Image 1 (cartoon, rainbow, N blue to C red):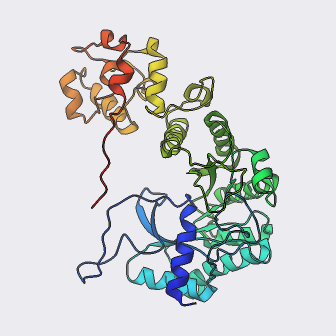
Image 2: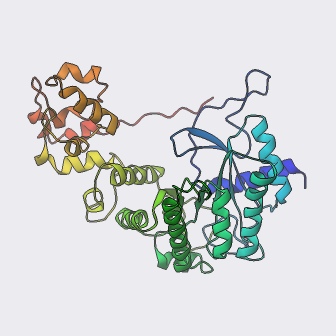
Image 3: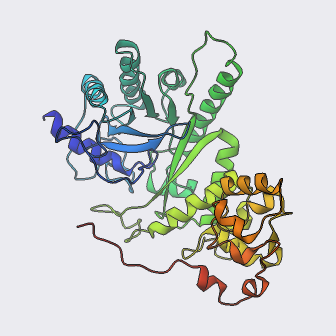
Length: 407
């Protein structure tokens, strides 16, 4: 099988891994000789570096052959899909060729399980090791580690990779046992715990210039949403536990996608993509805005509303806490105003040190007003009657719109 066909199969097989998030940019390339680089092409995706830069990565599997038969996975051993496998030199050459052409700035590498967990991890590790030591590759490397692999292999992987990730797969241990019986939730947690210890040790050794950093971009994980009946509240509870226990940099949510010849144990249709989006919003509120799970997903069914974002939903349920006087409210209170982000709040606080904020000042401070106005008070603006309106939710809900087909 030629390298182009392998790339086609293994880049497509890697698209289900959300741990390398697409930026959703427009398609551009330099194939006509104008400019340098490309935002498209097989296996190229976009992610974010620890410093916030958007970077292009070659995202592929080492192989989509797998000894495991996880029912939700298109690459499961019983799946009737074309199989392919890169050799280590082929992956190394692809990465270097794409890098030299300025198509990518790094590599995201995962793999199906072949022979054993240790053998698979050895091959994944060898790619990163060869790039770093033999070719002096300085770009970003994200390796998906194998939970059952030996501690020595995962430790060595952290010396060459910027980020390591281990997927928890499903939000429920019972669901994992049912849908992926070869996988062990406890083994996954043990591996994440070992990574946490290595990251802690590396943090303590940062003052030593002679010790290499261990996975400086930390560890992340991914869970599939909608393959079982787990509620959003349970998913967010698990997320909070994972962030606190394992120093995760990020948890990725991947909406379940129905696959060919699927098991009857799986749902027939995919969950709304908006559910995945709302979970990301809730995750952000927990990490950076001081919200607790019970505040965000406190309804009887434990599900986030799909028609409005979770911060707006919370504000509508807690109207007694509004309107807020933006000239007196604390930063923590302002962060709970719908539409207010961290930068907008910081601009407000900086400006009010010099004089009281008026309604007309909000636009110059680039404060979003569409959602915020019913929930705030300035020295010349008050909207308590609007806040008490029974139709406020309908007014603030996004209006349905026809999507473009992009022709």
